[in-house]
Length: 122
Length: 107
Image (cartoon, each protein chain N blue to C red):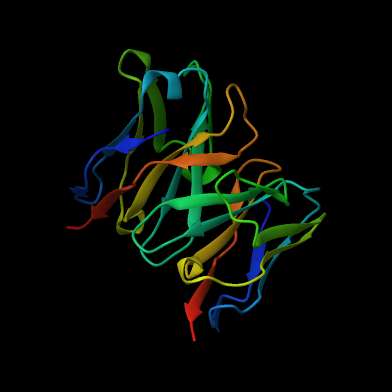
């Protein structure tokens, strides 16, 4: 059973940064690509980017270029997504998601975390 | 970026009904399309990938078809647990993009 467990809800002020983490077991972590997707309240899904198994390569959506940083920490089988320059439009549920197959970057997002709600409010 | 247009945005149906949801891509994506189911308060769950391949947990009443720019998700006989929102996602190129969603509600 693959489980992705995300960090808890955050409330941030405009202009601040937020860091969301996602943790899984070692054998569900190594050699897999991970993605981040967000969903504003009552809205659709928006892909933010992905990180490769080594953590040395990332691909970000142009919308978030310069504001997002995705990293992974193999010692804890975890990954993080940091978003800076927050505005009210960044209020959303943020999800980590894992590819179905090892070493695959097919965009088959088979496993998802439970989500982390980030609220941006003054 | 590839745009995905889903229709309808919502539909009211009864248990046992046949449900068809369409997803149209703004350019040819071959068969690189996935479908997700999302229930309130939960993350999306992958139902179908590569346009027609079912994930292992998905009941056979779900099916997907299409290629190029036009795709369909069909539920042959809607069950109570199928009331949810469904999204399509193109797997062809980055940035990954999603359709706007179809909410399937109880009539």
